[in-house]
Image 1 (cartoon, rainbow, N blue to C red):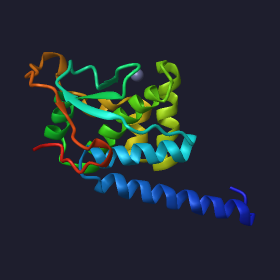
Image 2 (cartoon, rainbow, N blue to C red):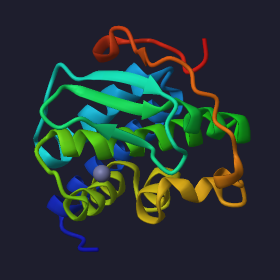
Image 3 (spheres, rainbow, N blue to C red):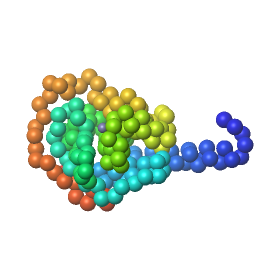
Length: 179
Ligand SMILES: [Zn+2]
């Protein structure tokens, strides 16, 4: 709110950063690209990084979005849940925001924060800093990613159980959600 040059400069820089992350997320094709944004935003907000993570897709209970197995490099994302989001929304921005929030949450666990009480506020802080207050990612981070599935009877749905699948070349991947 101050009019001195220094702050105006840093505000301008911030809004450019927000613009760039929004556009990257909106155009990201596949898990590997969303993952690059997860890593870039964590580096930008916390100056932390971890390489060599692997992503698996599995059909899990629908109240579970993803998990990180402690002591491993493995992240597991709930493919069944992502499929439901894809079936209910054609918006790539929304689908990518949903995946981003889930992966960011697990990445923060993998960076050495085992507690939910540490991770949840940080997911919100990073989203707000990198996408701005009024972006869908920040809203999902604030009220929870399940909010976009409000009205869908998740508890009554039968989830087909398929084999667990590894996302190949996740750290440099270009894999689409649906093959
Ligand atoms: Zn968690």
